[in-house]
Length: 225
Image 1 (cartoon, rainbow, N blue to C red):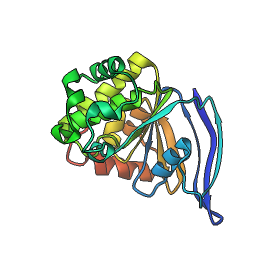
Image 2: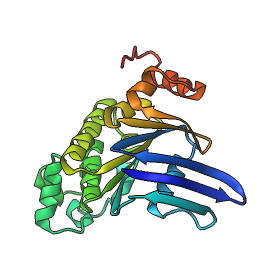
Image 3: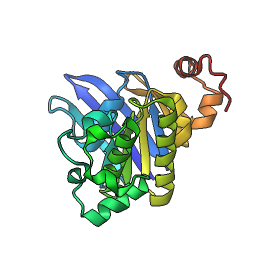
């Protein structure tokens, strides 16, 4: 279990994020834009701007840590072949592509020759090349259509079951959370306002903010747990 006893981000004596949470297996950190999700990821990766003050008290935050970013179209150099983005040998490259169900022929292609779903699979393969203990997911399906989104999320979950890394998934999309995460924490204005099992929160939210998020996500979808 990864335990963040306290993650506090401060700017000019103003608290931006002040949270604690546990990642038992997979945790969705859900909130609207500006809630502190991206700051949390940057803090864990050590990429916060220097003008922000950070307190990070954690247990079992083992490295390496990898991230799958929002937009695969901007994650890769368009003038560089897929194989040249990897820092592992060709045998390992083929193994990684096989994990994400891509043929080795993709190694000689350029990013512009791939669809969004194929690009995101390459980004996932790149993140796995580090053999991460923790995989951070930063809205990894935002640029994908709904069908491709579900395929990619289920693939990530299958890879977790196979490889054993833990997941921290930050998103505004509660629907995606139920596909990939057993646990959920709701983030509002830099604070966690509700946490627990994903399906329990979705079926019986306690906080009005959580109810609003669920209603806005599942409106007109006839959702059932």
